[in-house]
Length: 180
Image 1 (cartoon, helix red, strand yellow):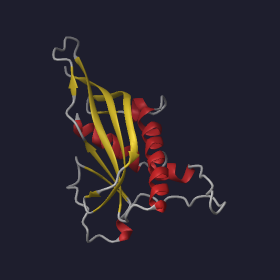
Image 2 (cartoon, one colour; image 1 turned 135 degrees about the vertical axis):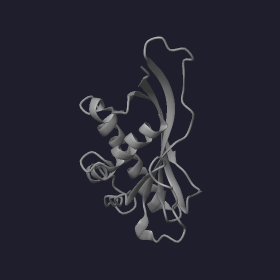
Image 3 (spheres, one colour; image 1 turned 90 degrees about the vertical axis):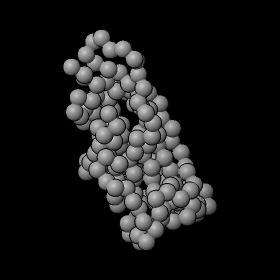
Image 4 (cartoon, one colour; image 1 turned 120 degrees about the vertical axis):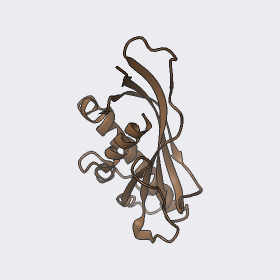
C-alpha cells in the first residue's frame, strides 16, 4: 500500500498539467504591506523524489540549482479492521510531502514555502481527489484512494537530507484494497 500511495502522490506532483509547477503558475499572489508590490512567484520544483523509486539522498554538496525538492514518503503504518469478509480491505495511512529548500529559513523562504505548500495541496486535489480525476489517477495495483480524511500543512524548520525542510503537507488517506 505504501508503494502505490507514494507513487500516486509523486505522480501528482510531477504532472505537467495538474502538478505542483502548474499550480505554482496559477497561484494568486498577495501584495506586500511594506513595498505595495505583489509577492514574487515561487520557483518551480526542480525534483520530485519518492521513497519507492529513489534512494533519497539530497546531499549538502548539491548546489542551489538542485533545489527546491519535494520528497514524498510514507510516514506511518496503515491500520484498519482486523477481519475482512467482503473481498475489500479499508485502511488509513499517512503520506508526507516534504518541501526541501537549500537556503536558511528567512522571510523570503517563508513566503515561498507558504505559496508552494498551497500549490502542493492544490496538485494533490486536482490530480488525485477531484471527481473527474480520482477514478483514473487515484488507483494503482488494486489500491484505490477513497478520500483524504485529514491533512496537516505547515512550515518546518530543520535540516532534512542536506537541505532545509521548509514545509510539510501530511495527508491521512482512507484507502480500499481489493484482496481477492
